[in-house]
Length: 269
Ligand code: HEC
Ligand code: HEC
Figure 1 (spheres, rainbow, N blue to C red):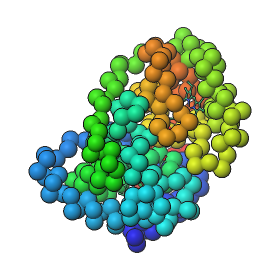
Figure 2 (cartoon, rainbow, N blue to C red):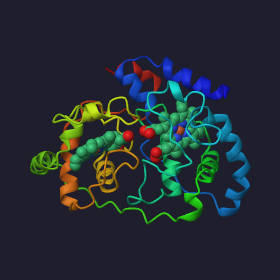
Figure 3 (cartoon, helix red, strand yellow):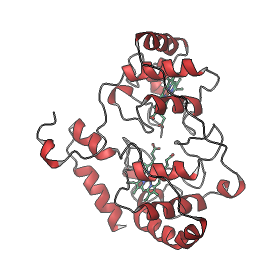
């Protein structure tokens, strides 16, 4: 519990300036995900339980119901882990996430939310936590994850692709929620005020999955479950890529992935 408090203090102490904030909030884009062998994971069970109570329960609750003591003060509510519904999956809509998906979320954090990257925990500890997360929901005992979506190689992001994306963005009325300029202020936005979910403001660049072409493609293919952001899996690949290219046009701030080395701090804008 004390650790969670310290972690919150560190997050709150980060200067309000955008560039700082972004740096605090995002883990490395690529993480090692190779799971330890089954017998090791069995051995790690007890460790996962202890780690969860120590590091995660302050927000996610001791029973994983998302109602930890710090939850009421947070800008985004911690996930209720007993439901087994996850926003970040590589699997199709309706499927539980893969173990690798969970590992990635624990490692990278959820960008732009109080769920910071757990970089100081060893890979073994993070795998132990994955099994603990799964233990909170019946779904992981009753279901198997569907095979992950294979992301094709993205096309070149040129003017033609972008203008096709701009047209589709209008036709599909993405702007009803996200706004024409992607600022998260479309006409439907007032009906989401005060709700647990917030429409993504693209201009701020804080995407929970990521801002690369592949990240946005996957978000559009599988949606963000448990939120109004649906899956657009009826669209063709070229259409999804075009939309991704358009969304990227609306980003005004780019996340900085890792702490830059100390000597370059001074030179950053
Ligand atoms: C400071 C509060 C806080 C702490 C501590 C915290 N989390 Fe979170 N966590 C959150 C919030 C808030 C979200 C919801 C983010 C969202 O919905 O965009 C979240 C979401 C998640 C998700 C769900 C991602 C998804 O796909 O929907 C996982 C997995 C997760 N946390 C695991 C952990 C683990 C494991 C720990 C402990 C090592 C932990 N969290 C500690 C606040 C916290
Ligand atoms: C009904 C409202 C609604 C519509 C329509 C909608 N979105 Fe979203 N979208 C959301 C919400 C809400 C979120 C944030 C979900 C969250 O993280 O809790 C979101 C998030 C996103 C994200 C961010 C993913 C990330 O990694 O953070 C992208 C990209 C996106 N939407 C693209 C689109 C595109 C393109 C369209 C049209 C094809 C579209 N959306 C239509 C509500 C909507």
